[in-house]
Length: 278
Image 1 (cartoon, rainbow, N blue to C red):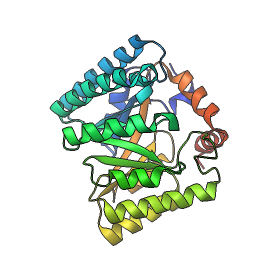
Image 2: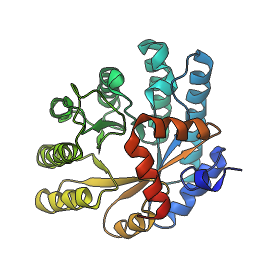
Image 3: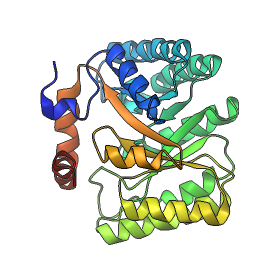
Image 4: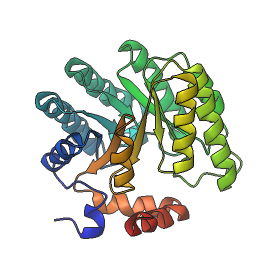
């Protein structure tokens, strides 16, 4: 059993607990984005195991008729061991998901993985005519060019502020600058994209900005938030907009928490605010 602080943010250790969480969310008109915890492997076996687990999870989602998709970290599928291994595993998972009608998100990690992640997304999104999404981070200075590049690619793009503590020469480090970048990226996407926009934020100001852009441009979008964070707001927003909750699960939950808290000082403050319901 997970301790209370972990069970607020992690569905459980088994796929069954994640699927049960998904059914509960679906009953409240919220979809689920399922992520099996694991990342930064230095041996190929765990990457192969996670790829196989995701292929099985795709079948469980499809067989259950659930409103759910999956989200995978590149380092989880072996990117630290080489781009070729990562692409092989990812292509296998996406092919399986495409056969079963399940959407696949590719998470974004630190800046050293950006090129490999975007290249994989673009190739697979074109091959499968959508059905794949990728995350971009507003704190990186390069992201505006990346977003312009992805404007004509089928699939979806998730916009987040960015959780990694990146060097100042390649990233905005001031909160106001990151917020400004996020707003500008959303404005560009709602004006230029035909659809496939995901607003990954718990910030009420950013969500309001997105809903205002939607009212102006009519561009389809969805809101994505983490399990355990502003959940009542998620349920309220689901009455008017598509909402998806990011649901991690798996037995690597302890390293997940330590890594998230160590990456950036602000992550600890964010977790404390979530626990306190603020």
